Image 1 (cartoon, rainbow, N blue to C red):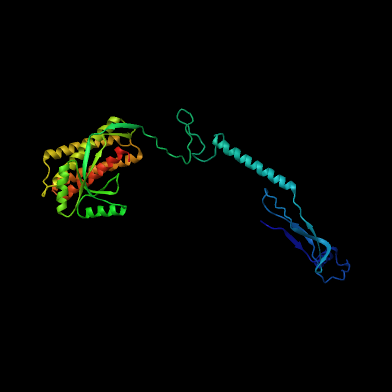
Image 2: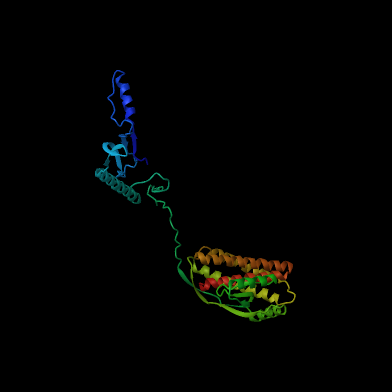
Length: 354
């Protein structure tokens, strides 16, 4: 923004200019006695502000020729006043601009006016020529609430080998690391997250035998029983029969793998499974895989994540059991135990809604 500019000239310079314009024969009248004094007078003033909507008329003083003497110089002052016509015009222009802008915005929302931006405010048309939905920027995807279904579960009771109960998350993490470094299984309870387990079996006597064997190696464990409910209310948007079948087959396969791995680990020298046992395991796993695929995407997002964890745990347990039957490595049985604990504790989270 340019401020007010003021131009001054010396009277002597002005006189010489007039003499040149009038010719050499013209004589200039003598100057007053105070000719040596510098006297200024305003010959031009200008204000420029550039903003047509703002009245920048100020209250500063303008200098004009006058007869007031100050420090040997002659001035007089005129105070610039505000132009109320400019103020009124500026206010009227601002109001009209705001009203016009508001009208355009409302018209865009009502689809009376479209803007030349692809995908915004331009209704699409389908093959029949009918207007389709208008794309909306920043739309929020809201997950549709799945209906609550009631299912009956097979009776399931598991005996976990509890390594300890810890007061902090750091203690839980350290306990799991200690078990894994010893070549054992390690899992944290999904409901009571302070508990850490080292093994599981559906048979209490088999669990006690395994606990006793570990005790001789310096690992002291106690039995902690977890019983899953026989009925459950689950949010599910698919066929209830498919969910019922999936849960039933899950219980059968979890029982088979946890019981067989715990029983084999109870022996000083684990023996491989028979051909019949291996065939039954693979057949059950194949049927379960189909059931898992049938319910995929039918659970709420959080439960869907847990179901995917169950699927990974079950597949890993079957692979580990197959590896044990090929090579006879005891570490593979502990891997089966580890994955079965993950599977059962994840299932507990789904059926209890915790």
